[in-house]
Picture 1 (tube, rainbow, N blue to C red):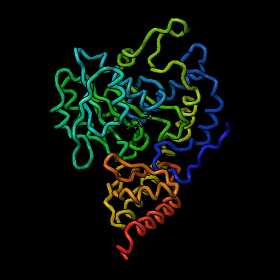
Picture 2: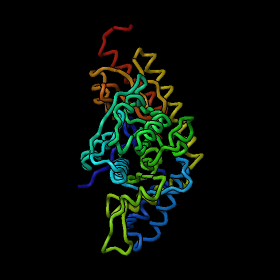
Picture 3: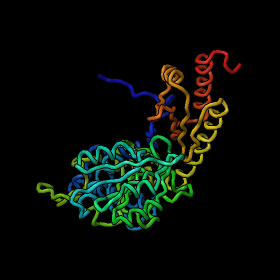
Picture 4: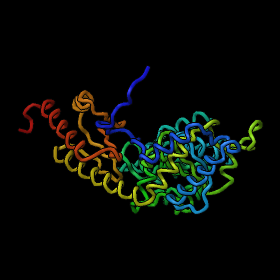
Length: 359
Ligand SMILES: *Cc1c(COP(=O)(O)O)cnc(C)c1O
């Protein structure tokens, strides 16, 4: 039952990427450690605290609370759970734009809270007026997305903050994917916005750490305390994570990647990826396709179902938005030559799909 993992040569839709070599090494070294039991595995527990501090620095929070999660899904579930449990509402609800990641739907289902989703504006960003209209006295949490999964868009976090403050609700920012790119843009996305209470940021996506390494940050210790349950048979007394035994490999590789890449390595990588995305968007639009301009290194383009299927058949790992657009995520493993050969295939499949149309 041995197999080789797939190569990344044609992977254009994943939000993951091969870990940085140093992160890979650290992951292997800490494979047999469990940060869920810090009294037995103190070295990895210390590294986790360092990772939380570093993630706090990235997200402009000087005294961060939180933990390394198994991913954005766990971080989002725990953010919803903390907000539910800190709220006085009898029947708490969560309000989010329809572009919210499906993990928030899982959170709502698991936690028994109502999720209200609202339409987005023409730029696929949350509309604060629509969010406001969906909010009431039972709203425990508003979720904004900073780097949406389908279009890479950044919601207007300051405006959502005003809505949350007026409603007496908490504000969570989901920057699971975007968090390692946004510091190098001029978006307002992080704890510099006073109303932001919690934030998801995943080292195992743009952070170049090995899977599994997600992150949940909280402005207040009370938010993490709201998640803590007692742990009778462990030496440490409480646990705020959803998972019990956790990946020391994820924690150690996140620590190594952050050490190696923050900030200059991430900046260089972001600038290269963003330039590639902009170039790809231009090339696709020169082919006459409707392209959603990339605000982060993610390009969506309306290419049609048969061309999409033909590209999949060529072995390209591409995916579609709910509206059916082709979606290309320019992760660190994506290079110009990869995109050139992809574009050659796009031209070829379009030629055979619309014979002689543009010759
Ligand atoms: C990927 C992603 C998630 C889920 O994270 P996992 O690590 O896959 O659990 C949540 N939110 C956003 C915006 C994402 O891009």
